Length: 161
Image 1 (cartoon, rainbow, N blue to C red):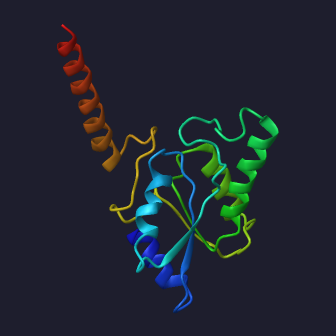
Image 2 (image 1 turned 90 degrees about the vertical axis):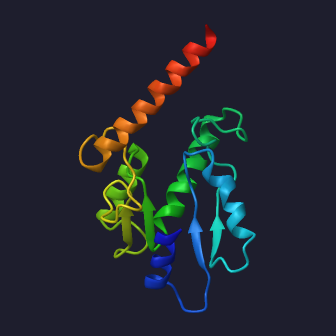
C-alpha cells in the first residue's frame, strides 16, 4: 500500500479519495481488500470485477464454463486497467506483458499514464520475482524458496514413514 499511497500523493486530487482497480491471480489478494475498506482513514475505494476468473485457476465460479462470458469478463478487467491514470502490475504474465505493451504504445485512456512493473521496479521493497527471473536479488529469493520447498517435502516424506 505504500506504493499506492505515494502514487496518490503524486497524482491524486487533494481531498478526494483515490480508486484502486484491483485484479489478481493470487487467491488471497481480493478478500484482503475488506480489511482496508473497514478502515475509515484508508484513502482509497476499490473497484473489483466480482465475476472475474477465479484467481489462480483460470476458471470462473460464476460463469460455469461459458467461454463467451469468461472472455467478456477478462476484457472488462483489461479495459478497467487501461482507463486508469496509474497502473501497477507484476509483469510476470502474458496478460500483464500485453497490457503494458499497449500502455507503452499510448493505448491507455491517459497517453502519459504512470505505470510500474513490480518485477523491474527500482525500489526493492516493492520488487517481486517472476518465475523466470534468476539473476540479481531474485537468484537468492528463488534459492531460498526452493530450499523451503525441499525441506517441506523432506519433512512430509519423513512424517509418512
